[in-house]
Length: 206
Picture 1 (tube, one colour):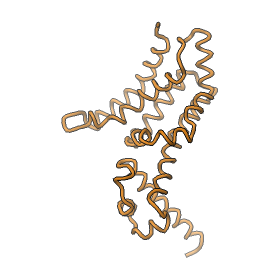
Picture 2: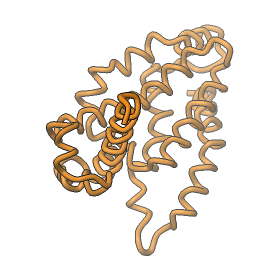
Picture 3: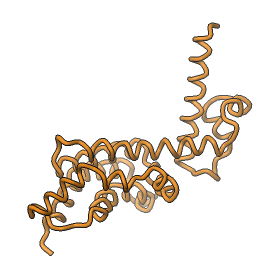
C-alpha cells in the first residue's frame, strides 16, 4: 500500500474515532463513557484507539472544543454580516441553531455543562459585544426604532428561547409526554415564532 493510501486510512480511522467520541460524550458526558465504548462505537479495537489518542481526556477536550467551535462559528458569521438587518440576523441565527440542534439534540446540554471554562476561553460574549449586530442595535435604540435594552439581555433572550427547549426536552419527552415527531414539529414552529417574539420585546412599551 502506498504512503498516500496509508495517510488516507489514518485519516479515516481518526475520523471514525472522533465521530464515535463526539456521539458518546455528547449523549452521556465524560464520566459515563469508557475508552472501550468509543472503540466499540468506532468499530475498532482498543489498542488502535490508544495508538491514535493516548487518553480519554484528550479526546474529550477535542470534542468539547469542536462543539463550542460550531456554536461560536454560527454566532460570529451571522452577527457580523453587514448586509442583513436586525430582524434578518435574528431569523438566521435562530434557524441555524434549531437546524444544528435538531441533528444533534444533546449538544445544547453538553455545551451548557461545560460553558464555564470554554465560553470564557473562546470569548463568546466579547465576540457578540464587538459585533456589527450590536452596532445596529445601538443605532436602532438611538433612532427609537426599538426600546433601550442591554445587549446581554438581548442575547440571553435569543439564546434562551432557542436553546432551552433542546436542553430541557427530556422533561417533556417521556413515556406520557410528547413524541420525537411532535417535538421536531414544535421546533420548526419556533423558527418562525422566536423572531416575532424577540421583535415584540424590542418594540414593547415599558
